Image 1 (cartoon, one colour):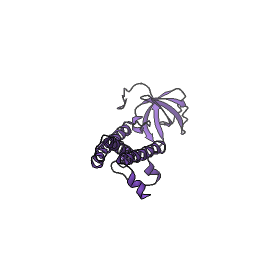
Image 2 (cartoon, helix red, strand yellow; image 1 turned 45 degrees about the horizontal axis):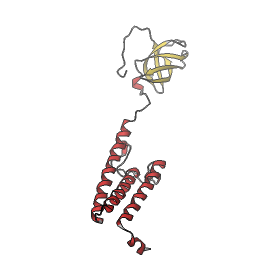
Image 3 (cartoon, rainbow, N blue to C red; image 1 turned 180 degrees about the horizontal axis):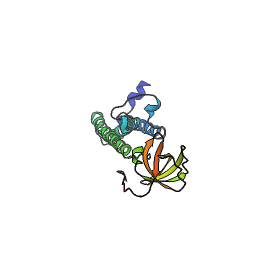
Image 4 (cartoon, rainbow, N blue to C red; image 1 turned 90 degrees about the horizontal axis):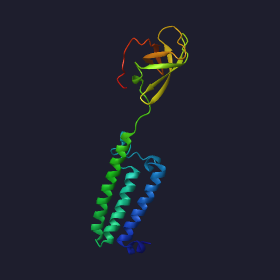
Amino acid sequence: MLIFIFDLSGFAVFLIIAAAGFVFLLLSFFLGDLFEHLNADIDLGGGNGGIALLDSRVISIFLTAFGGVGAICSKLGLGVTFSSAGGLFGGILLGWVIFYFGRLLYRQQASSSVGAHQLIGRTAEVVVAIKPGSVGQISCRVGAERVEKLARAKTDSEIKVGSQVRIEEIAGESVVVTIDDGARSFLPPHS
């Protein structure tokens, strides 16, 4: 077996490394970060950035690029040392590109949840009547998103379906509302 390994040309070794990296990349594509499945907590720069420096996708790109560039350099007639250096440079370069591109994409993700602080001061419509001492439901638009919340009246009066209300405060998972008489002109800070 060892004799077979020593009989391989540099070109063949680089192709095997590229193929192994590509298989690793395909597995990462379908399964996500393989290190998460193995409970390996290796994190050099990932954390909240979405992708770590030693993420399985970055490593697989590094291996594929190392093998591919090394094979190309070997085919061009460069020795094993220069082919390895070229492969190392190509692997680091493409691994770095994937790492930063992944972080950029992760940071561009928008959260679809609207923060409670964004609701205060907004006008909403009652969609389920609010009885005295009980909860109803309101519907409010924040940007392009429609938010529906349980609501209680600030005063001890009934608010009928279809009434316009103003969200005054947040009380846990529900909001406290008053009937919107249109007298106040309040523009929320996050329109």
